Amino acid sequence: MKPIFRHTFLFLCLCSFIACNTHKKQDENSFSPSDKKATQKTVELFSALSLRMEKGIMLGHQDDLAYGNKWYGEPDRSDVKSVCGDYPAVFGWNIGNIEIDLKYNTDSVSFSKLRFYIKQANKLGGMSTLCWSPKNPTVNESEVNSVGNSVGEILHNKSPHEKYLLYLEKLSNFLNTLKDDEGNFITIIFQPFNEYNLPGKYWWSKNQCSATEFKEIWILTVDYLQKKKNIHHILYSYSIYADNTTNSFADYYPGNNYIDLIGVSLTLNQENDPSGKIYMKTLNNKLSIITQFAENNHKIAALTNTGMEGIKIPDYFSNYLYPIISQYKLAYVMFGRNSYNDEKHYFIPIPGHPASEDFDKFSKNPRILTCSKVS
Image 1 (cartoon, rainbow, N blue to C red):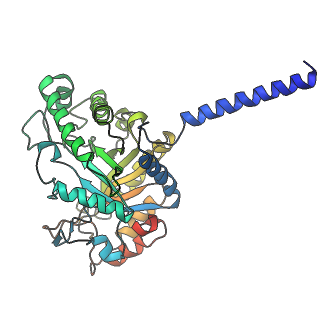
Image 2: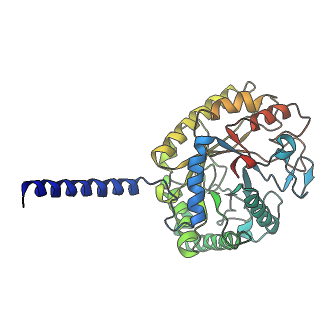
Image 3: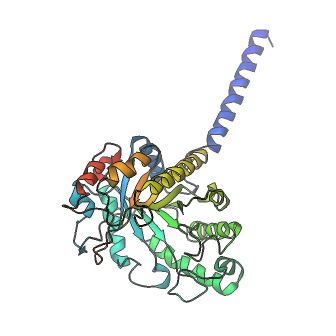
C-alpha cells in the first residue's frame, strides 16, 4: 500500500473509531424517558419538558378543573383562570382509593370525572400528574400508615404481596383508560410513594422501611406496570419533602432506570415560620440539591407541591416564592388545592383576595408558563 493511501486509510479508521465512541457516549447519556418502550408521545413530552425548562417554569394547580373555592363541578371553571385569565399548564390529581374500588378519589372527585378532566387538560395543551397514596395492604383498608414494616411484609409475605399486586391491577386498569379522541394514550406523570422522608406519615415512610426495601417496592411497582401490564405512557416522579436532612435522598433513590422526574415539596406554615425566612432558606437548599442531582442523572426537576394555605402574605408569590424558584431549572411548580367545602383551605387566591394582584403579576411573568404559553 502506498504511503498516501496508508495514511488515508488510518485517518478514516481513526474517524470511524471516534464516531463510534461518540455515539456510544451519547447513548449512555441520552436525555430520554427511563422506560425504553415509552410511547412516542411520552418521548416527545419528556423532550418538551427538558427544553421548556430553558424557557421557564410551568404553573400547576391541584384539582384545578374539578372544583375550587366555594364551587364544585362547574364546567370549564378554574380558580387560576379566574384570577389571571388562563388555565394552569399542569393539572395535579390524586388517584388514591382506586386500589380499593371506591368510586371517588381521596379529594372527592369521581374516577369517571377524573378521566374526563385529564382528557380535558390534554385538549387544552396542558399535562396531568397523578399522585398515588395507596391504602396499606397489610392492615385495615381505611389506613395509609402503620407502626410496623409494611413494605417488608409486602415484599416477603404472600398475602400482603398478592393484595398489593391486586392494587396495581386496579391502578393499571384506570391508567389504560387514559386516551385522547384519536385513541392515543395520554402521557401522565405518576408520583407514587410521595414524601417518604416524613417519619411515620405513610406506611412507606423511611423510619418504617429500609432504603433497600423502599427501592424494591418502587421497582416492583414500575416493573409490574411496564412488564406485566404493558403500560408505557407514564413518566415516573420521585418526590420528597424538603426537610433539613440530605443524607437519605440518594440512598432511597430507586435508580435511573425507574425515574424520570425528581421533585420536592414544601409549604409555608406561618404559625411556625411567621417571616417566611425558614421556608425560603429550606426551599432554596433543597432545590439546589435536587436540581443538581437531576442534571447529573439526566432527569427533570420540579417543585411538586408548594404554596401557603390562606395566602396570608399578600406578596408571597412575587417576593417569597419567585426569587427562589427563578434560580433553578424546574419543569413546573404545583400549588395545593383550593377546597370547595373549607373556606380556609386554598393555595390560589380568588378575585378580590389581598394576594390576587400579586398572583396575577406572578402568572404573567414571562418565566412563569400558564397553559396558553405552552400550547
